[in-house]
Image (cartoon, rainbow, N blue to C red; front, side, top):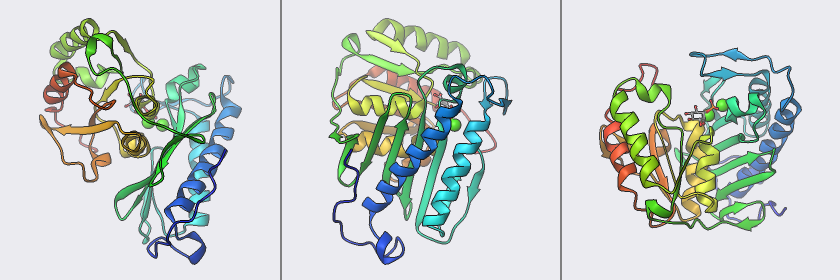
Length: 296
Ligand code: IPD
Ligand code: CA
Ligand code: CA
């Protein structure tokens, strides 16, 4: 795979002379995503996972999530010591430099823990708040999705999103409604799920936000939505999707939000180019009216 840095102008904000390019950052993120993937694969389909519950019985963590995040944090701070790191398992650590790393060591933990090959390591890197590099590595399928200013790639191959813009031909991947989507407007959510099932050719739930977004980027599915996502779920894959030509939009309080730093927004709707899915827009408008949990 050709993931070596090609020449790019140095960016004095990033660090030492040898580290001063976004391409170097991406190539480094690809390397550590692969390393974290190798650690996680040791636990995949293994029965000694050390599972703990987090918020409730729908929300779990394994010792492999923790080991992968620890590996990523250590590697990032060794190479880019001033970094801010925002990770799912260990929270945020503030650095003084311009790079912020939004990392999900295993996105799709429930799939990972059950032995389903639908989970990935996700690393999104922001420079002065703007996401400039995104890497999503699905080790069970050896899919390395990545993007920066060179474009979006699956391994060595450039990726262009494409698909079916009308529901009757389209496949939507959504976990909606999750238990947390049934807290505020449960009847409406169930009706909307029924409507989507009738209007779309196919509705699927993958259980990994970053894989769902990368599959829209690859042109393997046509749309995806989710509510109450975190920056570590989407920072990398939203960039990958946009660089592949797809659309990524966020909603809050019933309205579409500006693009700037929207990886920090919780509710998203993504499609292949030209996607026109009124039912999904309606779900976004109504369901994004919910109050956010106190910890956000
Ligand atoms: C979850 C997955 C899931 C999505 C949830 C995420 P995790 O991440 O991406 O598909 O619906 O919102 O929290 O817990 O497996 O890292
Ligand atoms: Ca996640
Ligand atoms: Ca996770």
